[in-house]
Each structure stands twice: as structure tokens, then as C-alpha cells.
Length: 304
Image 1 (tube, rainbow, N blue to C red):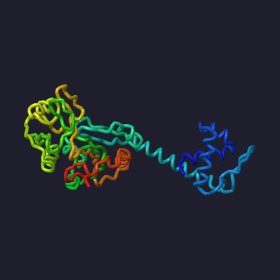
Image 2: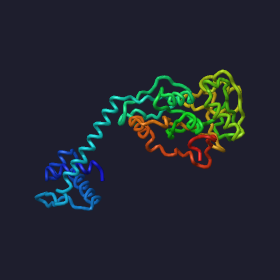
Image 3: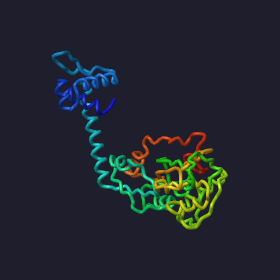
Image 4: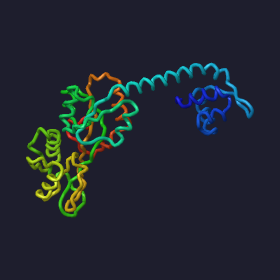
């Protein structure tokens, strides 16, 4: 049973004519008839007596009509209240690098979303949510970070990492045969370094220490050329155009994933914020992260 079907029932009850009701509802007559039959089937009662010349409410239909009208009025009131809340209170969201492409469309139905212009590292954005500077953030986070900062999270996205190398071999490379960059600037690269160190320890990949911020961008490509071997990319550099002298190579044994969490305060009680959480994460699922050939670091909230 759907609200849409209940609205159809009220229209037919008021018009007592399927043709006029269909015109009022801007739908086809046969479709309206099918929806009324489906509603009757779901309710287990016949709502209308109908023949070729007339339509009338059954006793059950007459008894249910005022209750259905009251239910639809309450549903409309909920919609009006939600719009009022969405218009009066902006939900502040920060991010590290990545946002879902349909972010605005998903959030607009429940709240007015303000995306913070300051793009900061994952650990910084999580801390801003914890201290109240933001309501939500899209970032990489560990279970221990959530617990320590009083946060909750849901999976929002995941990047399959790949390797970049010189030459023209685009075939897969094993994780143990790759290099992983770690930057000395822990203020900017804390989250990546924690992730990369775990990747090195778990897979046998080679750690390469750098101090120039070349984890992404043109600096990353320069390090690939110097390493003379496949280097795992950082998810913050997924969109950087690849120079013609470099190639992407899939990483296997295992496949290496980076997760993006939507985080909020564990004690959050505002309905608009929680409604945005639900709207943004609805239908995301596990994104294939629970396969046996997938690597996630220990402490990742979505690792099984």
C-alpha cells in the first residue's frame, strides 16, 4: 500500500467516475483501475462497486474514506514541516577530496546543505565534526578515531587503487611488487601515511619516504619516474590526468581499496542532520568490499 494509491482512492471516491478521476490525477484510465485493484488486494476489501454505467463506494470504502483522508493530511503535514526545517537550518558538510556525484540531489529533499569550501585532510575534517565546526564530513576514518572522537560513520564510497608506472605494460601487478609513498609532512598526510604503512606491512609493498608533498599531482608522477616501478596511487589523486609516458596498472593479490565515510557526532539529535545521513547513504550497500580478494586496513570500519 502506497500513499499514491490512497490518493487515487480518494479521487475516485470523490468523482465516482474513473475517467474523470484519471483526468484529475493526470494518469491513464487503465493505470488508475489497476492501482485501485492493487490497493483493494493489499487491503483485503473491495472499495468500489462498479459496472459499465456507474461507480459507487462499498460499505468498506465508505468506512475507510475519512481515515484515508486524515492519513493523507498527516502525510502532507510531514512534508510541509520537512520543507520548513530544510529551509531554516543548513547542514554543514566538509570533505577531504571526494564527494558523490548526486550529493546535492540526494540532500535537497530533506535539508539545505552547505558544502564547506575548505578542503582539508581526512583527520582534520573528522576533528571539525567532533568539535562542532561541521555537522558532517566525508573522509577516511578508522574505528579507533570514531570511538576516540565520539563519532559515528556510514560507508558512502570506495576507491579501487591502482599502480602507475613507466613504460607501456598495462597488465596487472601484485601488491607486493609495488611501491607506496609516505610523506614526512604528517600534518597534511596523516591519514594517508597510516593507511600506507598498513598496506606495506600487510602486503610486502615497498615504502618510499618523501618530503615534498608528492603523494599526488605532478610530484607523484616525478616519483613514479624515479622509482622505475609501479607506485600505488593515492585516492586524492584519482582525477589527475596521466602524462603520456606513464600507464595505469591494476593491483591484484589483493585488490586495494580506500573507503570514504560519512561521519557525524554520536550524540547528534537534530532531525535535519540525521535525515541527510539517511538520504546520502540510502542504497549504498557494501560496494563489494566484503569479497575475499579485497584488502582494507585493520581498523577500517567496513572490514570484516
